[in-house]
Structure formats: C-alpha cells, structure tokens
Image 1 (cartoon, rainbow, N blue to C red):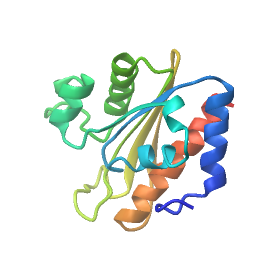
Image 2 (spheres, one colour):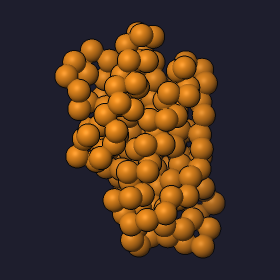
Image 3 (cartoon, rainbow, N blue to C red):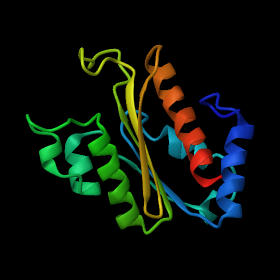
Image 4 (tube, rainbow, N blue to C red):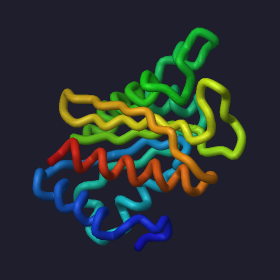
Length: 164
C-alpha cells in the first residue's frame, strides 16, 4: 500500500499495461496536488515510462504551463472544474511532454469552494492517448482526503480501461 492507501496491485497492473504497450505517461493535477504522480512513481523503475507531472493548482498555472485558454476561466467560461479545462490540460501535457498518454484532474476537494452547480466532490478527469481524449465528471463523497483518493483511484481505473 502507498501512503494514499491505494492498492499496490492496482498500481502494478497500470504499470504492467504501460510497459507492455511501451507507453509513456505524464500527468497534470489540480485538486489532487500531485498524488497521482506520486502513486505512479511509487515503484522502482518508473523513470522508464513516467515522463512528467505538473501540479497546476491555479488557473494561471494551467494557462502558463499547459496553454489552457484564458477564456475558459472568465465569466462566460466553464471554469477550472470542467470538461473543457481537463481536455485542454491533457492536450497541453501531450504537446509539451511528447508523451503517449496524459491524465489530467481538476476538481473541488473541499471543504470549501463548492457551489450548487459544482458541489464539493465534483472532479473532472481526462485521459488522452494518441488521438483519443476521454473526459468524465465524478461526484465523490467524503472529506478532502477521501475526495482526492477517490479521484486518484478513478484516474488509475481510467488508464486501465483506455489501454486494455
């Protein structure tokens, strides 16, 4: 088990799939603060398939580091916790890191920050492999740590679904 209490066999299954398909991966995370990258690099030898991890917590860092369009964050935009933003983050990661696979996460882990439209526990995750981008909205229950852990687990499961 890692510090995040994610099952080691799940992590190893993801790693085995990446190695078998000769894929490299990079991440960009907001609400999880790098936990996905930490989990993915918890096993020795991860430098052979893990390219990079970004923690783009602020809207400004999403724009400057990943080239997310600023209009996504304006009054008429979808906001940081949206399909548009995680998709743009994934495209940015692929372009910048020259990796095969990108996983991006943005959400509201709480305890504050939620709205009626986007309550605490709302998380968007995007997976990008080759020309395919999948994005999915989740609503996780629990405290801040539980929301973050659930987001990491969902991201790992999404990797398995995408590359299997």
